[in-house]
Length: 128
Image (tube, rainbow, N blue to C red; front, top):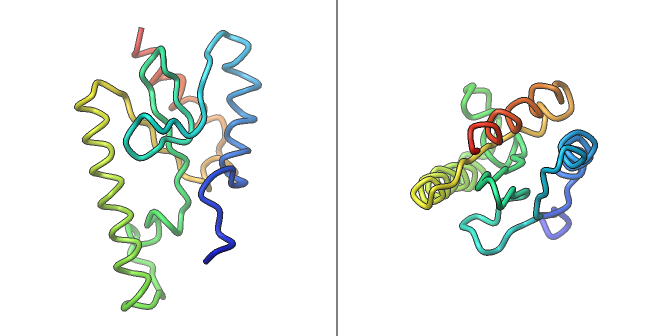
């Protein structure tokens, strides 16, 4: 467990490369791991008030939603469910503060980067 990173993960770096090559040249500036917000979003567009979280499929329960789980019911299931509840709570708190929340899955960054980028672009456009 101690080797598992919470920041600068491979999916996070891939996502940043994606937005750096497309959104940064268009003038969209962002901050990383913004500690002033609940949940410390991975990428924050402060001027537009858009917070982006890059969620790992395992840690944030992607398999649980599909009902495909071979996990230890005593340890992993409660841990992942707590993560999912915390995600919902953070989303609510950020929305109350006037922020737009975008959550992207690590497998979408790998398999469908254009779809991931489109979700962020839509959120930014909606925040003129």
